[in-house]
Image (cartoon, rainbow, N blue to C red; front, side):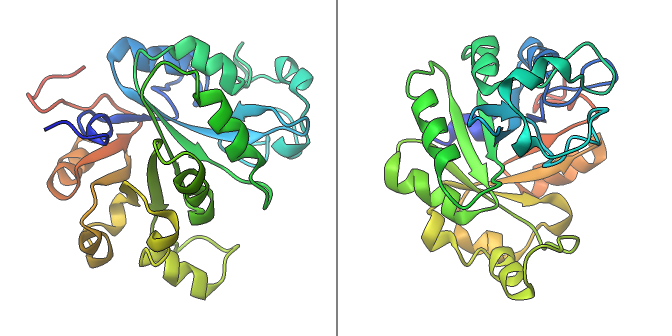
Length: 247
């Protein structure tokens, strides 16, 4: 029986697009490559200083570009001047990504917050109202996901989590609550997205919700993910499909 979570469970999801040496993560060609191979796309959204939604993972520019500074200080007009990993490609706006993908494969949209308001969630909801394609939102922040539960409950929601061993900007108490999915009564997720090295665990199992593992980086890891999860997010290789073939 088809459910609203069906698409997010039935085919591996390309982490930040199907990126490689030529196509940087979260770039338009990486997303086009995902479409070509038929994989759903996981991507990250942030707000610029002039309140436009762009697709970029880090809060700082330095890892992916030759620039310093914070993404939140960018203006939309700056984007064309910034190159991703010395390629010809620039940081895309979310609007441009929607135009490029155009419903050809589903989108798993991770919300990266740099503020305590819900401007990003509000703008995202407005933009997705007219998008003709399948999509879901996910976040580590349960209050971000709660926004969609309250204001756009028709949107598929995922709660991201892990054991948070290498996260330093939240308290030990909060790590424990997030690890144990204690905020699920806040976010009301439709599925859980949990770090593969922390799976399986009783906290995820006890939810009874579908589970997506992140991030799978080899076929061996994919085999484990298939045993303990409903689906997985991958990068760095082309995973085999259920019938043993490659996409």
